[in-house]
Length: 331
Image (cartoon, rainbow, N blue to C red):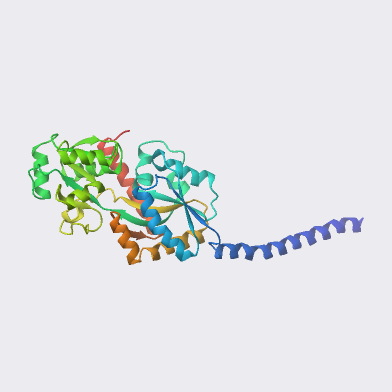
């Protein structure tokens, strides 16, 4: 009986030790796989249509980052629902193995959730990798507006409440929020006129149907002298008209945030992959040729590493939420 009792114990012990040994052998291979990242093609889901600013900016930066990592990048456009379709795919359908990343915009992670239900939680299901670039936005003003600088424009708007209209690319877009932010900070009451896209709004701005627009589409017309501009939105001045100060230089633009682009990953993605991708993006945006491409597209490099970008998202998510509630914006 003793032998019968001991035999299973010995076998069990041998199996246990064998399993432990196998685990010890397997563990280095797992670590090695993480250290070898990336060892295959990387996919970046762009949740907006091809050719748009999010798409163009992502391709400029990530192609260079992929080259430094020694792997090609597959750009996968999954547009729709203000970025939610692509984001949901990355969160729910793609493996969080370090080989799928997601392009984001300010609106996608800081604005949309305040206005409509989403099939995911941006703060819990996605993590920051790196911020890549920021768009300049011109405060385009119709030439017939009797003002020659920002303070004169504010005085004119205060003297004519409800008579100054600003156009946007649509309800709840960041281009509307910039107008609402200006109303709050400058103490004016401009009236919002939503359009189906930026281009129609710019056409009406040029013809005098509206008086103001906060949008990148105004920049070529500002450069050509067809529109007045007393401020640009961004962290630094626009090279197309370097004599025009930023809104922040003039004491405004302190709430909300900039129109930036960045890269996210699904929660659970290996930290080693996130860190290496972030570092590769940081190196990519140091390239002068890359920066020339960004500037030509109306953007500038504004790299933030993982920790800094995550903090920016959290801060601006709260700020934009407060603006939306204060301006009573609904869709």
